[in-house]
Length: 152
Image: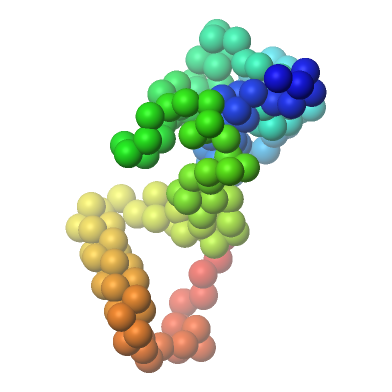
């Protein structure tokens, strides 16, 4: 392995930290302050350039209000190996979606909905829209027809 090439597992864990941090709307500077490092160090963690020790990873998980296991989770169909974790060759579609502006806005807004029934209704609506679109059924609605604008 080239010394300058980040380890695939370190890169994957770093990307998961970045995803969670962004979902919470937290800056690298704020995370750095709360874990006692510089924001440049957080950048290196998120890129997989620098490895994260166990106690520091636990502190990051605490600050991001998540279990450490989130940083290692993958789809059920694939065992965790350095090759499967290489984001450059096998991107996680959920992580990729959450790195888009639309993904972040949608996720943040959805998490603010406390009523479980409303959340389930939204999920059912999105599934129905995706299924209709995949079958070539026009949905017949434009953004101009939506009364409430989406705001971040």
